[in-house]
Image (cartoon, rainbow, N blue to C red; front, side):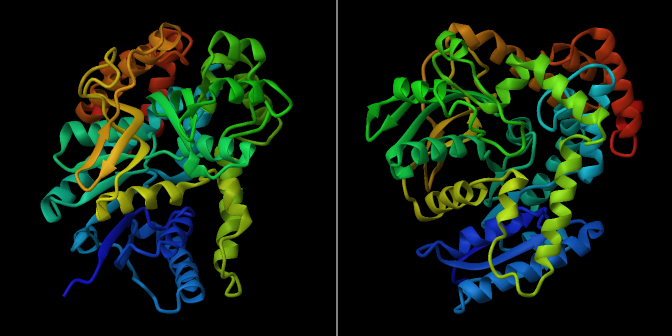
Length: 440
């Protein structure tokens, strides 16, 4: 007889997985029965490293073993009995991520994993695979809830909600990282902070910060303009500094990824300098970090999460996932920033598009909180990127080269139609194993 919640983690061989397991171990009142890690056969060695390390975490921190830990390479088997399915896949692995970052740089465009042409290439590969997985969830566990961490999270979540019937919520660790960074700076408990955030995944803005119900956005902006303005919020992107004049013209806290849009010249220069100096792209750096992480995971004496994991770029990844699962499973009402259907929360964007906003989460699911109109200063950028996202999703699903080219031309980080055409040709060539349908 079932005694608790079953969770299936797709992409279980990820270096992030131990943080998730540690987060689940730390939940006292969530009845857990089983966590199944599943990955592709090519990730077998990484899966074994992750599994053995996670088992040590369980044995060391939870001698009573609140839940069992299993591995699988068979999706139907792994989905059997699942109440929650967490997706954190990387189609093509780090090698393809490196190409996603390098191809745009060849043509003088930003090379990044989730935004610009790099995020576009990632989406073309990933969306069809994510849909295939979701259709298996529909077939085997139609009432399971799918929590999507797979990047580019907003586009993948929108594709899942458009083309499947699975209850899907998209997550990103950037909003909770902003929240926790503010709480730490103010030396207050994180639960005392609430963000009024709006926009898209990796293109969002905090317009109000509430401390126990009082709006303190002016104090936070003053803090950001001061000595701490260069404090990095994310490990996956370089440190950024918002000049005081920017925070006065746009009196909101920009998502750190806004540097690629607003400081694109300096961001591109830094990327090209690193590349030409042999430092590679962020993918190169992450591969080295992951190599070191897996060596630690393989060390039998390692029984706690290594500090190095924070440099991987997934700060508070487990915190937001566990809070979401708690609220859904225990009908515990909580407000979380998630990626959900718009449904009028941001009236300037399509009703059925996915946006990143606060949502009330309980046993019924996640319902976006209306934030009112998008400020004029950022409305055009958000609408343009949403149009790019919708074109990219359609291109990925249909294998439509014309829509793919239109998407790239629409993307504000692609400098011209000529560059868009060259980038698309390279992406389709380098990813022909995954994107063969574009030649049909």
